[in-house]
Structures are given as C-alpha cells and as structure tokens.
Amino acid sequence: MIVAEHVSKHFKRHRREPGLRGSLRTMFSSQYDLVRAVDDVSFEVPAGVKIAYIGANGAGKSTTIKLLTGIMRPTTGQVRVDGLDPHRRRVEVAHRIGVVFGQRSQLWWDLPVLDSFRVLRHIYEVPRAVYDRNMRLFRDRLDLGALGNTPVRQLSLGQRMRAEIAASLLHDPAVLFLDEPTIGLDLVLKQAVRDLINHVNAELGTTVMLTSHDIGDITGICDQALVVDRGAIVHQGTMRELLRSVDTRAVTFEYAAGSVTEAEALQIIAAELPDVRAIPAESGRIRVEYPVERWSARQVIAVLLNRFDLTDVLVPDADLETLLRRIYAGSPAEPVSVGDGA
Ligand SMILES: Nc1ncnc2c1ncn2[C@@H]1O[C@H](COP(=O)(O)OP(=O)(O)O)[C@@H](O)[C@H]1O
Ligand SMILES: [Mg+2]
Image (cartoon, rainbow, N blue to C red):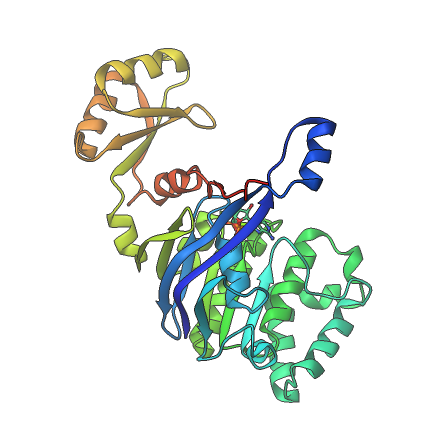
C-alpha cells in the first residue's frame, strides 16, 4: 500500500556564521550545507498494517511523511501510495489518505469545528451515510460534539488534536499518516485516540503509519516497526522482532524508606553489578539497566534481594523503553559541507 524505493530528500541550508557580521556574510554567501534528511530509503508497507516509524529527532521521519503525502517531492527515488505518485496525483491521493501533523493544523483557523467538517465532507465527496456514521463515531469516542461551534483558533492543543484526528478519518481513508498525533493529549484521550485508530483499522482495514515519541502509542497501536537512523532504515520487522533485538533489559526496584540513601544504593549497585546502569526514578525507585550478554534477570534480582530491603520489584517483559530512549538519543542527520567555493 505504501512503497518507497531508494528515496532521498536533501535540503540545502545556508551555512551560518556567528554574530551580526556572520549573519550578513551568511545572507550573501553561496556556501551551504547539504542535509540528507532522507537517504536512500526503501520499504514497503502492506495494506492493513499498522507500522511505527521510529527514529531520533531529526532522523527524517516528518520529511518522509511529507514525501508520502505529496507535500514534498523526493530529490531522487520514488514513492507510491495505493499505486499512485502522491505529488503528481495529489488530488486523487488526498481522497485515499488521512494525515495528522501534531505540529501544524490542517483545519481552517477561523471556522467552527463543525463547519470545517462540512467543508471537508464536500471536498472529499463523503457520502451522507459515511459522514453520519463517522461523526457519530467521533462524538462517542473523541467527545467531538462538545467542540462543534468553537472556532478552531480557540481550541486548546488537546481539543485541536481531537478535531485533527477526526478530520483525517472523515472520508474513510485507505491510509492514515500520523505524525506525533497525541501531542498535548491527557492519558484518557491518548487511550481514546489509540482505541479509535485500532477500531478503524479493524473495521475498514486502514493502513496506518505512525511516528510518536510516546511508547504507549507505539505499543498500543502498531504491529510493525521501521527504525530510521540518520536518514536510513536500520530495522524493519514486527514489533516482536524489534523487542527481541534489544540487548539491554531493565529491572526497577524500590527499597524500604530509610534503609539506605539513594547515593548508597547507587554505590552498592556499581560495586556489585559492573556494566550495569542505575537510574534513579520517581518516588525512591531505581531503574537498573543491564546488558543481556553479561547479566541475567535472575542474577540481577539475586543481588538486589541480597543487598536491599526491597519493597517492590518490577520486571518488564522486554524493554522497549530502553531501546527507544537509545534511538531517540541518537544523533540527527549530520550536514555535509558542499559549498561551491565562492
Ligand atoms: N524544509 C527544510 N529545510 C531544510 N532542512 C530541513 C527541512 N525540513 C527538515 N530539515 C532537516 O532535515 C532533517 C530531518 O528533519 P525531520 O524530517 O523533521 O526529522 P524528524 O521528523 O525525524 O525529527 C533535520 O536535520 C531537519 O533540520
Ligand atoms: Mg518530526
């Protein structure tokens, strides 16, 4: 349903020099850096799959989604959505896709929410029955009815995101692109959005491509994952395979108040469990991350039982959090100097 073949997107960026004189020089300079936002990326997403697009800040996720939705054209390579070139066949593709960018609005700023939906209904030629069914769905699941007469500009971020998500689904798109869709939502609404997306996928077979910094969005929605690093794909597979590739696991424990200080606890761990990372967490907990080639969960827990007055131990299944933290801490696309020497 979604195909990318050797896709690259390069941006030219004027090389910045510090200070006022630098700024002036920058304005008139023909020196620039080339940012390889997307670098020879190929992947295929079959219809009906919900895939997470995971990568550090600046890894090229939003750019990829702009290429796939026709907002930008690739520098080289090609993309197809439902067999169509999204840039050249923008209107046809728009009828088949829904898009949510958490960072910017697709709605009309001055129109009341409900009027925006009426306009969208005409643009997308949504049949009455589909429109009514979906508006009912949004009212039930996103409490959209409450927002009906408010102009978009007066909505809070959380309210606007609900309206954006509903708008993206109004015309029963075959493919849904979500770029940080739960920004600004509280826990209850995040869950409502995840449930709605899963519901639509189950009912209509909607293909979903999601980027999010929220682990709950990724595990709560997606069954596959694409991991992108510095513009290139480094992993594609099921969520389960991604988790199996994690070489760090974690145990979180809590010790009886007053039995040791945090500093002492960290010292004990450093002494007894070399190569382990101990991270103080909220409410007197400590998260212990250990490399699986060196330690087993059993050994780590044995040390904890031996040395601490434990009040709680938490052993997560597999540690997506560690993996994502490491991916998101990774380095963004590094500019390559290509000044023309002028
Ligand atoms: N319009 C643009 N002009 C110049 N550079 C851009 C533009 N859009 C994105 N970039 C750069 O491309 C890289 C990838 O950006 P982006 O796709 O937004 O990453 P992500 O969504 O993964 O955080 C970054 O280094 C970013 O600064
Ligand atoms: Mg982004």
